[in-house]
Image (cartoon, rainbow, N blue to C red; front, side, top):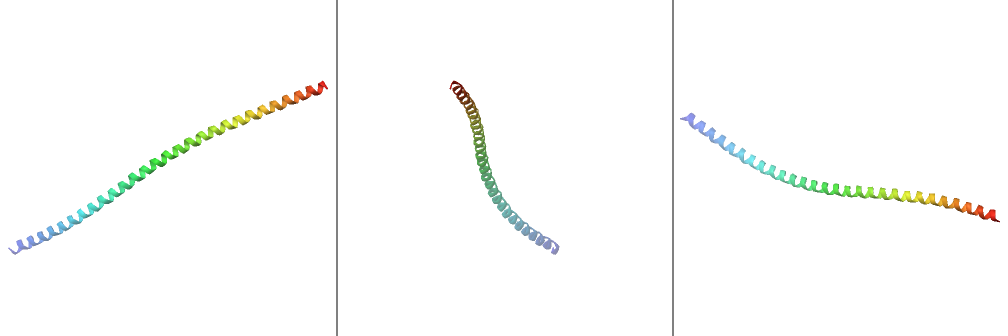
Length: 103
């Protein structure tokens, strides 16, 4: 009888400890879930910002490429103008020589 009472008392104590441990585990699980939700929200915000920055970067890169092409065209036009001016100077010199021969 005494042994049975002792085992029952130990079982009640173990059951109480188990209930306390379960309550603590439930609290930790709830806290972990909150942290997980917060982290997931932050991750989604970070991913959104990253996508926006990536899109902006692509736009900047496209604009930079457009400007490089425009600069190449400007340089080509300047080269063409330089060649044209050289040809014009040569023609002017030739005409001056012709006029001098006429004198």
